[in-house]
Length: 183
Image (cartoon, rainbow, N blue to C red):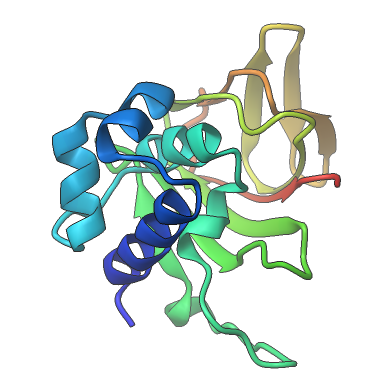
């Protein structure tokens, strides 16, 4: 099933469970009522930050909006991972494992083009992010600290605060992100 349709189904289900109108969800997420309507109809392909804002407004993990039915064992091939990007397409995220009722983390493969950056809004309360650098050098800035990570380095931090990924190098930056949502 196409990602936009999955998001549409999950968004409508979550909004209905909470007895929220589109207007109410618009106020708590910061996304316009018209955009939310388009997303619920499956006629819009929301950006990463749009999904984060909706997830934060609904107080659910990011991938809850993308979750589908999963088998006992799941094999995800590189060409099957769903790619999402920011508005300029220089930051690409491939979701391999979304959070589910039995899995409170998400696993992403991420690419950031040379000499670009991507600002990420804070995730849900108590969320933690774990990063592993596969190739390149990442500069990560949070309101609390600045970090420089090179190939083979890892970092865990409180991702409920806004953070920015920067690639100041001339090579493609590749890294793994796990977002963990403690109960």
